[in-house]
Length: 347
Image 1: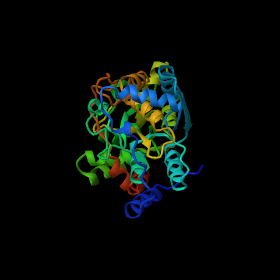
Image 2: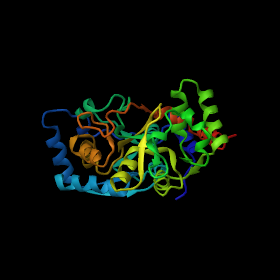
Image 3: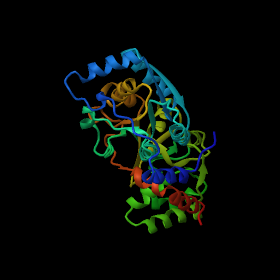
Image 4: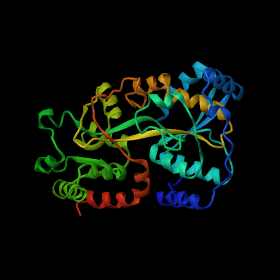
């Protein structure tokens, strides 16, 4: 499936603000019910439905861990359609417009969930677990909630670079010793925009990265897993954007990789939302509660993800970071991707 440009999603979202894309379905009573027997009712209703379908961009092995734990606990089957984040978004919008409702729950980066929300595809939920989530984890419309945080850090090959030689600031990357050693994921518009804004002076931040690219070069590679693997094999000795959980997994498996964090540290949330026209709304609600609650969040933490639920210890609890604003990232993605591309080519 080809990736549909984000400008089409944005245009669609704007259009929906003017003309309704489809009629709203009255919410299932359990979405707003908060009585003492709430979970008992949800479990009973979910078991009657027996199954749900999830559209997700999370790694298949990680989703399998989550679904196995859920199915073992509740006996409700989870069917997963997995693809890239753009494809999950595209399929969700396409099916909603065709009134072909197959998905019960979406799992994607929060920016893509924001696009689905603007299309009125997501169902508002009122959950008691919201009080345990990090501030800002739940949208104002209550139709999406952050399930975990992926923190961008810098990763390096421990055979090629000594810890004592690591840069202390991004400005240190102007040193000629980093020539030919730097790499970055090729679609980091959200990270780049958030980073230069957090530096306090966008123009100065853009110029700094442009100077680094012009003097020492920055290799652009497609895919976070690929970038991590290239650090491991030494082709990219120092990568500017790698998720902590990827580097931690590689290190635990004995690969020559470790990470450090240059300020400002930026993070992207992954979020979940129940489809407004879900064929299995109660099963979707049960899985939603599982993913945000202690049981699902412990699985995320065991996979080195930073859980959004504050009652679960985070692998990056001592790392201060700034979350990417999903609304701003969605509205300005094309702009920042163009600036990113030009900057990283040193022009």
